[in-house]
Amino acid sequence: MIKRRVGQMAIANRLKKLEAMQENKEHIGVIVFSVEDDGKMWALIEKEELKFETMFEAENYLIGVPGVTKNTVIIVDDLMVWGDGLYLPCDPLLYFCNSEQRCEFAASTMNLEKWLSLYIPLIQRILAESIKNPNMQLPGFDDPALQDLIQNYNSMSIEQLVERYKDEKWFRGKGR
Image 1: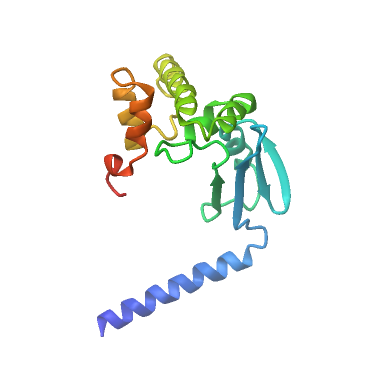
Image 2: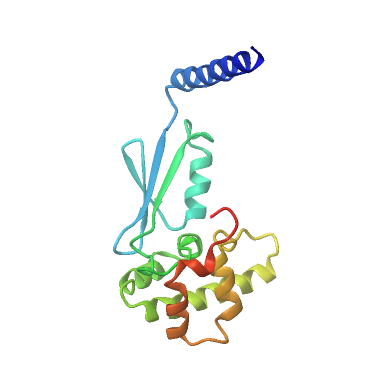
């Protein structure tokens, strides 16, 4: 009897949440971010296409948009700048690169050695900046593969690193 009552209360609470979301006509359900060939980032927000230089800029913009809530789904398409087949996060490219730098990554997605030779100095630069600014946000730096790269980029060649990061089994962290 108690289980049934708890189940009914959970269903009623879910229905109330759904009704509240439906009443909010200004709610934005989904926002899509992507990167163009030229390295520029764009977002599709309620049929309006906006351009941003970094994800930090995009996040700051979204804070002031009415209808963006914790329930808004944000989809980030980073395939244009992703090293094809490498299990390294693209967050540093989206947050810490400008359009011109992202364009270099986009041009080298099929040449993994070149892509990684651009990625490593970016990570080094970000880490050097984070030492100067200890409160700096570091999106993507909790990724196990990136943590492994930080530990190993001095001791391995680019070719060895490319081989290492092609195989996801080495970097399955907690919760993956």
